[in-house]
Image 1 (cartoon, one colour):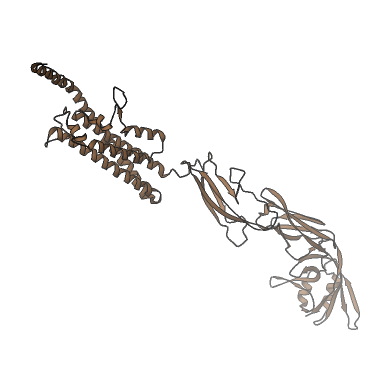
Image 2 (image 1 turned 180 degrees about the vertical axis):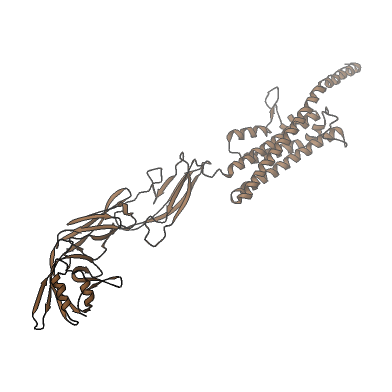
Length: 515
């Protein structure tokens, strides 16, 4: 081929190359608009990430024990992201500077269609920054994905930060191009800058996903609840008189959809309500321990150990006669019946050889047969069941004989003269008659005097008995009293009295000394 023809062919080749490399101004303007949009998006994502990081800081300030670990991790992720973001910024400026010279302005790119600047900065032989950038992105991607647990989010972030080789159009073997070549080879300056802004956008998005994951993980190990109840936990349900009742009032939360598993002494409870029941066949103190397991939202099992004890006592009741150690036939004997730890309205009692009645102040036993035994049996309602808590045997005695006395008033005071010492004649003459009672500080039981004799003695020592008018002094007795001189003695004898048991008995005589 002639030199002239060679020159013509070369000109066609150059013209064809120029036509192929010529980029439409509309396309360049489109890249500029995308670049502006991505820059605004980066500012928005960066602001959102700042808010997430501020929430980590706020939680750490309120609860350092739980929040410090996640704040430290968030600070590390934020630092790694800022370093990669700044490194990409420096490469963008280097490309713009290669296109526009030393007076390059990032916000006003003049030679947007320059096809050489990106390759010069990023690709061999003039630059190797593309390979370095790929390595930095690979390192950052692996670092970020180590914090993401959700498989879908992991796949999305891995695709967004992928630097895998790109298959070329011919699809032949060995036709894959390196990531950096696809990004920067023969790429207009504005397009290369836009792609790198998009890469910064992906980096900020990945940072936000990780910070959000950290906020979720702060209470991931906490137990979720859907029911809150109030509970009273007493130190003991049995309190002795004079001591203090003490209980903790607490609010407990449970998850009715995720019941805890309880183990007592190594054995799992057969119910999901935490109800522990144990036999009480023998008295004594019993210790037990175990643990509770609850499955958390993070899939981990939370375990809490516990230990406690309980005391088993033999059933018992306290039965005592209020007045004395025996029951007296024919009268009401006050009785006190109590069961430790059981309220009075949950106690019942029965008695043989008589009747046992509850009163406002306790119980009253009314035995019948003298010499026989009375057995008082006590039952109490405990934990919803009626239990026999004990019995006590009493002996029944006849009421002792009363003592006669003369009732009188002295300066407004009611008194009883029981004989054996001088008694004013004036008060004697004012008295109504003779009474009888048991008043030995244990019993205070009045008797009704049926009859008696008054025996006086004359100067010869002869006795002169005079009968009463029931329990009152008869007129003949009153007349005999008026004749008595100071120092004289007389007697009330053959005194008959009837008590509340209905028995009429002869009681001891009484000596009266006239003053």
